[in-house]
Length: 79
Image (cartoon, rainbow, N blue to C red):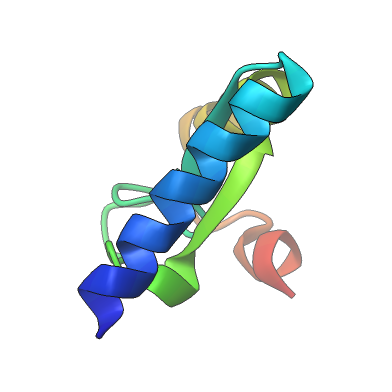
């Protein structure tokens, strides 16, 4: 059942891209490799569809936090 839901998210990404003409990506809400001791899962409840720009900005912010201090802001990022 969860594989079907993950496929549905990917289909939604394709549909958003096609309907808006803006590239969209499937994003892991909690990244697969966010911190050394914290990682997300490749499951439907950890997936969302973002525009390319939103996804790029989120990734850049995560990478900046990771370089700064893995523990700094962890709770703020997800709560």
